[in-house]
Length: 304
Ligand code: PGA
Image 1: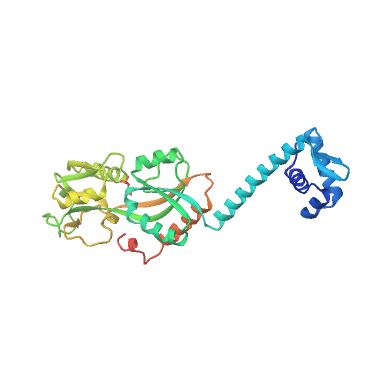
Image 2: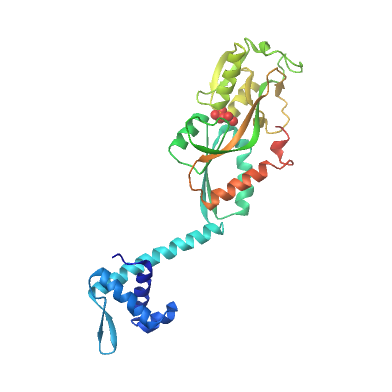
């Protein structure tokens, strides 16, 4: 027979008070019920737990050990309960987020407002490309992921968040700036700056170029959207980037080319591993993310 948590609680209370009567009062039980529970516990343990000398109740050696064990168990349980209560109140906890690079144009802004609302929450935000994010998913490193291409072969729960259009960006003085409805073949032989292998943006661009047999001259592979914008402005070539990377701002040194089949209409999704138990913090952020990205007056809506 295994001792039950209830029996341990009754025993711990009786041991603390060195009295069955006081234990009964504290636990709102009758004194005979306390006696029976302790008798059964003693039987389960295989040793007497108390001994009575005169009117005084003492713990036996085994009883003393069990008392320390119970105090440790109930201490831990109290801590756990406190943590859960705190989490439910959103007063503490940690959120692990993984996003692709293009999301850095809206996720940190959202996090700012979220943290203001829940100042006790710590955030770990990993910004990386698609293939690295997929590795993180396989290792179950984050609570939530925001990305465009859902990796096949992974069991995920997925919800759409925002559109992520990919546009052709050129230096402001490029001869094609201002032309309307350029055929995609106009990009042939252009000097091109490409995102690094493993990037979802790169995959999307290569897919489209392959489909329409566009042959650009790749001058440079760069792992950063910001560095690519600088390289375009510096005259190294043109590129295809998320419109979000322009941040809704007017640039004097960059321009979007109006090319057929662009923008490449992509969509960001928020995902988590199917069956993963989301913490209260993660659930709350997920609701917040879905609500905020759905609001028409948010800055990122204007350049979708
Ligand atoms: P990437 O992904 O950072 O891997 O290019 C961006 C995206 O698909 O939005």
